Length: 259
Image (tube, rainbow, N blue to C red; front, top):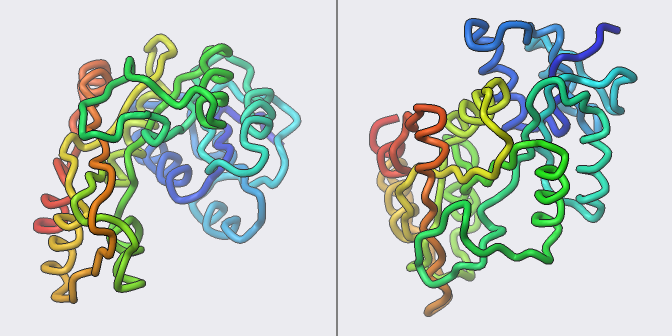
């Protein structure tokens, strides 16, 4: 087995999209050929898809450490330990990225938050972030991910109603936009830091649901809570400027109307 150049620990939908972006843009990623990208998963259900795309598929870490590392698995019961184990597979010759969530922020009153805003420091997410940052990795705090087939709009429609408030704000980013930023961060020369990523257009649940209902001529979701927390507004100016990047989809409304 060849030693990996990039290990993707948690090659779910986002992890595989990152690998595919790197595969499609070899000019941006010299040395990250497909056969040097290893995808680590808990089970084998995605292995046929991974192998068909030209990547190695694993259920345990490779014997050789990788120069680049992406940690993109969702929090579980042993999340901090799992992140620590993944970091042990990194040689630190190149960048590493831990995918986190804007859910780590404490803001719930509709205020604007960025990388300097207060977080829930006692949460597993925050503990894992601190571990990654202390080892020299980037932390990428993502807004809610969506695509044509996945996202909050699909979850709500599958049930017809939601026990949440229609006026609560949701920050979103298209899965392809999130994958592109993650990939670019993995091959950047930027100093390790925490970064926020959203499309910059927070919307209420009602606005998201209405746009999707209009697109598919389907009934609106019934949001049953009479009120609730307003939420937060994510600022992503730091990473946009650092990578000279802007999202393809400027908002969920843009995607629903034009995709």
